Amino acid sequence: MSWGLSLFIKRLFKKDTYTLFKKNFSQKKVIFAICALAAFMLAILFFVWLVNTQIHVQFILVMGMMIGGLVGGLYAMIHAHASIYMKANQIISATALNLFAPAFAIFTARFLQGGQQIPFSSSFLIQEVPVLSQIPIIGQLFFTRVYLSFFIGLALLLIISIIIFKTKFGIRLRACGENPHAADSLGINIYKLRFVAVTLSGVFAGMGGVIFVVTTSTEFNVTVAGFGFLAIAVLIFGNWRPSRIILAAIFFGFMRTIASSYSIIPFLNDFGLPREFYNMIPYIATLVILAFFSKNSRAPKALGQIYDQGKR
Image (cartoon, rainbow, N blue to C red; front, side, top):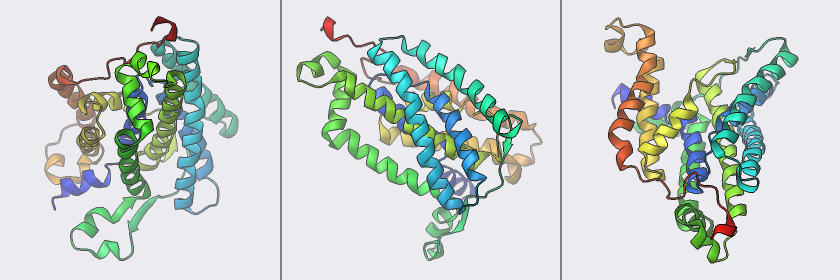
């Protein structure tokens, strides 16, 4: 296997993939979940507080993802209530929550630690999985120097794909995204289903926040480097379908890996280009991809529309 393939597969399920799970749930239900960026940052704050406790690191990771998901889900409920039941503009509601979250995170960090940066030192990388790491090629690729979140992400991908395409909930979710008035005429509670979908989007965003800080940082510093908006681009590129979204996530994960690990890739390091150039690669790739593929992307027909049962 080439070093490039190994590199991006091992980093495949970083924050991007979890955030894409939440985008797929929420925007299948046609509510813009841009506020998930805020849930993302709040989840990071609570996770960093947890990681400084004396508990086994992998247990901390699992607990952190659960707490991050809980925090993200609760925060997303605010957006869900405002945009669904109060019929507020979804973009304005999400933007307000996004502006509040960093300020609240900084205030809380300073209250707890005396500064907005909270360092932590735990290493969540699994050096090798017993027995499985001995399998030729596959063992080295998938079961050495890997994060537990990688396997959790694979499981979630399978589960979510089944839910969206094979269950009553998923069928109703997609129906409401295409024609909510028709779905309502069949007795489907549009408001309730939208609320659940947006809440789930917050859960996955919160989990994504934990994975982001685990795999890319050693401190909480109230920044996510635009990953939330990058996930929107990947969602468009993936045409709102889990199978295509995961391929888009692999591609952008590879771009992120190049940006963060170019110094250990001999031929890239030999170019002598400044670090800032490599840091721009994921975002340049986003612009190029959207320029060529956004015209062919088919979003749910009712995406972003406020549903009013009285106008049926």
